[in-house]
Length: 362
Image (cartoon, rainbow, N blue to C red; front, side, top):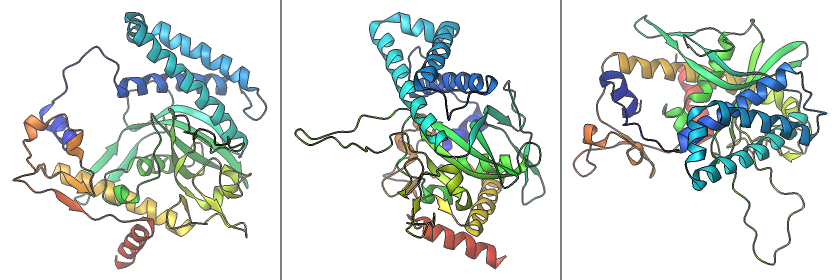
């Protein structure tokens, strides 16, 4: 568990508020606009398979304008200086590109947006809720997790409704980090899928997978004099974890590398190509992933409730949370005299072996 979270839990520490648009604030702007856009599309029963791109952009621009007009922070920020206005204008362009690409992804498969900004647990947020996610700790106490899912897409496949989770990220992630998942540093997608599975029967039958989706994508660099690729890479490719049985429902156009998701289809039509590092999982491995995610969550919660708050930041390769830590004066961890919690890098194949062996030993 990151030290920043523990400090907030035990001491109620927080940063001094400043009037400036930092990446988290801009991320909130993106989420607000995309939530309003998606809710409007769902309410108006817009068919992403047939609606024209310019019609989508028109709806997006209207919702963007409403957020800028109705939110006092963003309206004042944009009016404060030409530079600030340019930042908001650039954010609008990123959103336009993102929405067009999202519509292409949706058209390639059977899943369609069904819910936006849906909460679980004891969240006080306004909107749809899928109920509580409760896990049992080793000492018998109950852990209730609160959270909010950015977007939930649903498809009816062989008479059963399956759901896909999408989590918007400001910038692209190169891949799902199996090492971070194994060590409990990034269990966000697992939490979301467990929440949806826990609610299975209320609106869906099961969870098919979860993906990170970038909003901001930098233009592709092209060398001077080099011809432009007529079939460029899809900029907003979603990367995450999913049950490979649903591959054709995600991207029915996939041949070799999926244009829209992180999986590879072999010549024989098998969606498990390049299995050692891409996102598709065989059903048994997908269930092992879900079971391990649940155990990891309860293990972390057990450590917190037992009072474990030692300043022992991890180090995974060259990565460490100390680089972004806002509470260094409180922590007073010094790498010259203190020791990091050194973690060994593990890949997908190694993690699956470790978690399946753990299941078998029980």
